[in-house]
Length: 356
Image (cartoon, rainbow, N blue to C red; front, side, top):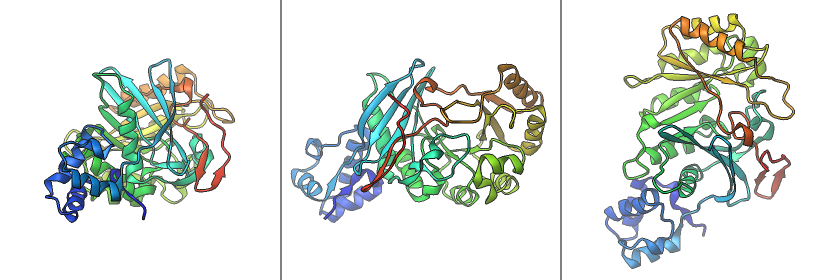
């Protein structure tokens, strides 16, 4: 009989589990507190749980954390974590400090099946989906690496994979992260990024999670977006932006549109003006991301003057547009640079490592 990974369970499910073992439900909240709150994974060390309950749990359950295979520090203080899963698959997470915040970028899949032309992860193909426990396990592992006094303040679902293509696991992991008896993150401190899966966006709108939504936009015409992002052939700009306009936003919350700037492709003044028209009337902000180079890519980063000119047009029209110089570029941990060897079961997809 395979053991239940407790990281896959909501605190309420832990309550039901201990109740099925003859213990009162509040013991489940204590169990969740040990794992999610204190980061303790040894059931025997959970001293306020009765010994017989700990033994019963150990016979049926485990706390399976990803194994840290490698940590690569960046000159900007970011750290790329290469994690190995139980089946040998590898994924990456990135810790990114910035002033008074410390953000963890988590993965939701091994690889990615959407093949965006500018993204190195897309060259891997899709290995498999992650479980909820494998997603939140990245938070626990990263937290263990922090120096005393530091804590993860924000979580972004912007690592390997498309969160809304692994919908059930993504949503459950979000509930674990935001549950007061789980990790207790405020929803406003979590961002889910998507390539634009309209059906997933519409489902997420019904979940009442109140997390931030980010859209990988990257083009202002269907012609260019078709070339950069094959998903646009299924969900074009009109359908995507209509779904965004319907998405319920808490007060003072806006949708973030991510826009990678590619020299000679989507970075002209006419692109900026079209972007203004596309987002008119929407509660939105734009992250402008100068392209992060990777070996084998045919794209290049625009000149700084061109980047600033693009931003200036947006600002002149009253749109919040921030330049995001990606963290961890020197260690292959920046936006669009994540790639690892993929092992799923016994099969292995050859993919070179991007970190030393």
